[in-house]
Length: 307
Image 1 (cartoon, rainbow, N blue to C red):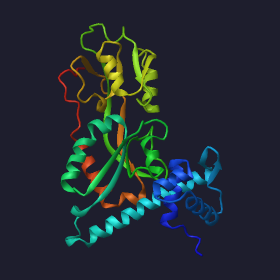
Image 2: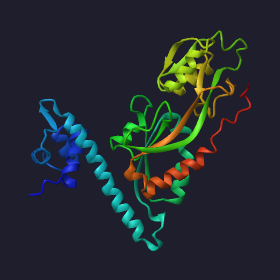
Image 3: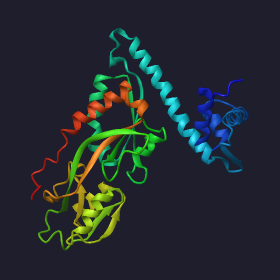
Image 4: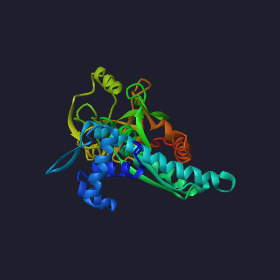
C-alpha cells in the first residue's frame, strides 16, 4: 500500500484539528468515530509521527500534527484550484469568466471596511462564479499573513514593508502607503495637548512606534481600545486624541478634526500576501488586479483635514 496520503485522509486531519474531537469530526464528514480514528492512525503510520494526543477532553494536535494540518489545508486548496483552473481552461476561449468556487480572504478591520467592498463588487461583476469568503483578523502577532501561511486564507490584506516584511514562504506586494494623522475632537480648541492619547494594539509597526518615541509632544497612551473604530468613537465623543492611519479615517464623523503631521509623518504600507502556489491562480490574480485598482482610489477626502 502506498505511503502517500489521499485527499480524504487530509480532510480527516483538517476536520479533527478543527473540531478537536474524533466524533465531532466524524459528524462533520459524515463518518463514524471509528472510521475517523482508523484514518488518523493510517495517516500517522504513513507519516511516521503521532499527530494527535487522545484524551477524555478530545483530540489535540501535537507539534507534528499542527504542521501536518497546515500542509493538508494547503494541499486541499491546491486540489480545489486544480479543478477550477482546468475547468476555466476547458471553457470556450479559456476565459476567466467561468471562474467558480470560494476565494478566501483575510483582512484587518479598516481594509475590510474601506478597501474590500468595491473590490468584491467589481469582482462579482466580472466573475459571478467566484464566492468570496472574508474573515476579519486582528493585525497583531502573525495576523492575516498567518492565516495564509496556515492554509486558512488564499490571500491576506496585511501590513507589509520594513517593519512588517512578507513572511518567509509567502509572496506579496504593496497596495498603498498610508500616512498617519492626528485626530482630535473638532470642538476642542485646546486639543490635542490637553487630551489623553487613545491607542489600540494593531495601530503601528515597530517603525512607527520608534517615530512616536521621538516626539516629545505625544503623551504616553493612557487609554487603549479594542480596534480603530472604538478609538475613533472615543475621539469623536471628546474623550481623547489619537494618531491613526488614513485608511482608518475614511468616512470619519464630522465631530473630529484630522490634522496632517507633515512630510516627516510616519507611514504604513498596506499590501497583500499569498502563497507562491496560489499567486499564479486565476482567481487570486483577478483579486490582486482589483485590489491594486481600488488602492489608487483610496484617499481621505475630507475638508476637515488641515496642516
